[in-house]
Length: 161
Image 1 (cartoon, rainbow, N blue to C red):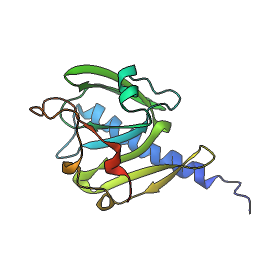
Image 2 (spheres, one colour):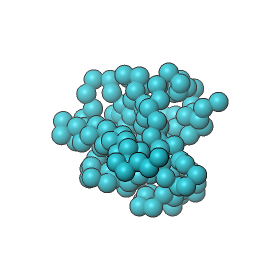
Image 3 (cartoon, helix red, strand yellow):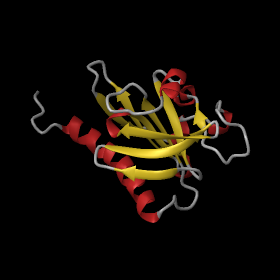
Image 4 (cartoon, rainbow, N blue to C red):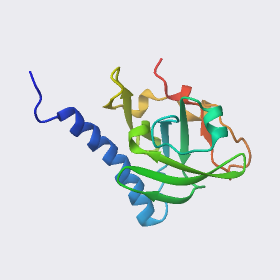
């Protein structure tokens, strides 16, 4: 049967819209409310992703960023967001299209979205309960310092076993 309405594309757009709206809310308020914080995973070589070459070398397929206390210049557009995070104490500008996302998690409210890669290269969206995600305290992080810098979490922490 032919889907003339395009439910799959509408669902994907709606799921990316959730992430976009959440980030826009953080911009409007000027910070994240309450205990909210986000783990956002994305494909580093997806079209439109702009990050430092050394980050692509370190994370050649996927990278997870944490947006919590230490971030700067968050800007949200219809098709991408930009943010400055520190990696090993050095601020880095990231430009991430929403189409590059593979996962969005807000563990403070047990919410998560997974954007799975289909064989055709298109993404399909799946709402995944955060309870399926591992405890983030057990993941490998880049910066183990005083907590004043951004944290990079190994993408392996988000893979289903």
